Image (tube, rainbow, N blue to C red; front, side, top):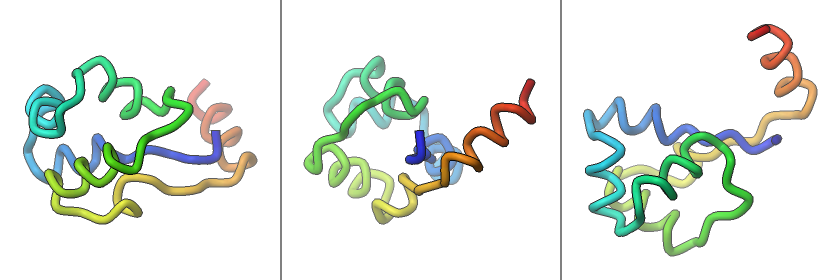
Length: 79
């Protein structure tokens, strides 16, 4: 998928657990894991805004675009 999710990077920078973030944002840890691992097909702006508010960041700190060829290169390199 060309949209990469960097929530784990912000969690590490803020020294916050997934459970704490989920609790403060108001979503389940399972739903946060789906988003964090890049398996989500969509994210509500309200959820994105809450994530940014809690993590004190901008949406661009959490989401980035990468070309399909970059995504494929990473997968091939990981094998």
